[in-house]
Length: 114
Image 1 (cartoon, rainbow, N blue to C red):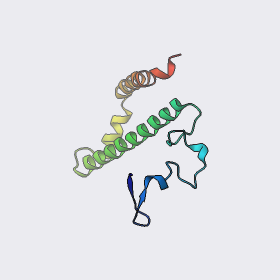
Image 2 (image 1 turned 180 degrees about the horizontal axis):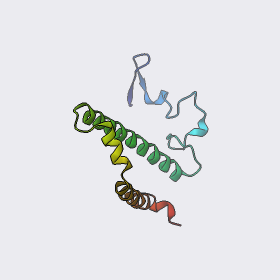
Image 3 (image 1 turned 180 degrees about the vertical axis):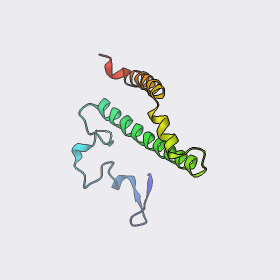
Image 4 (image 1 turned 90 degrees about the vertical axis):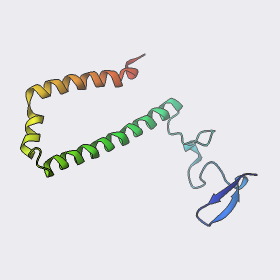
């Protein structure tokens, strides 16, 4: 028999008394394996999970970039106007646009396939 530690009431409960699906949740949200299922196609659920993970990763990068910008400004390495000038530079914009185009083509290529 498998024993599971229950944090709520600090009792040890057997696996037979627990369901893979939380009781207050509508059973339609879970697949036969007990995993959450929001779309009729399991592949869409996996895609949604990837999208959420990418969103989390993007937020981490955004926080780190913000920290770097703050450190650069605090140490006086560049001024706020210097940072703004870099983002407004036409040559930099052309390079970034090309890099963005390549990135979008590369990362979203699977969505274009039939």
